[in-house]
Length: 233
Image 1 (cartoon, rainbow, N blue to C red):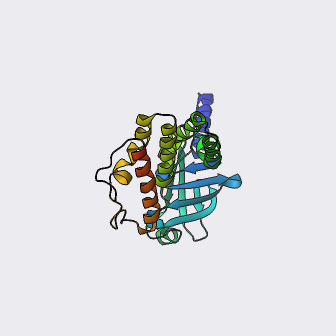
Image 2 (image 1 turned 60 degrees about the vertical axis):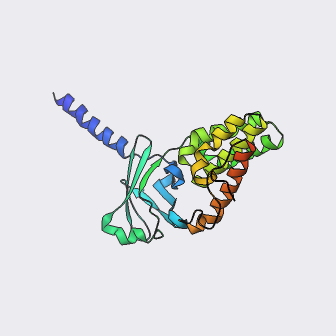
Image 3 (image 1 turned 120 degrees about the vertical axis):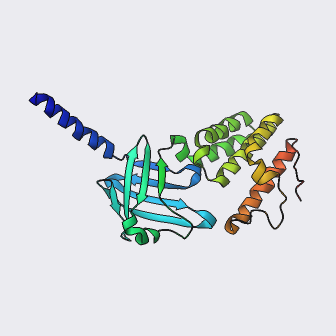
């Protein structure tokens, strides 16, 4: 009986240790909301993007699943199933707000992404090299794999660019239907709109970027045989 109790106690201790262990590495929020990097010594650095260009930046050292930033903000970290929940303490609300613009927050869930999602620059170079060499099959494979693996974690502007890359590649492969399919998720926001003064008025800082994406999306949509309703100006 004594041995059984000892083993049960050891099991509780071991389980607790595993539950609190936070692996080093890169974590991402969904929809390109932000990133968090944990490195040697449990040091964390995070950056998030909020509405209209507002951001959060914070760093510190995690001890027993809690960190205190240089602003005195207490942050709770809970890791489970490859997801890291980050929660600023209500007790240090003002100190935590000092790390963020008015329309940004770093609270939320950060996930361990597929390895390919941390290699966006090399993926883009590989696509550009294949596309420039008119190796459209290789280019299509490169960009479609990235969208499939990382689309849910990407910022809306980056994802729109990738979808346009895929669309024009499909066009060169003679796949007009696949081209339109790649652009379909952009249709409501970027294609079936008139690019006048009211377009994308909700976040002025992104107005120029959104109009640029819309122009590219509309051009590729029409190039692949799609019709715009209403007709773009």
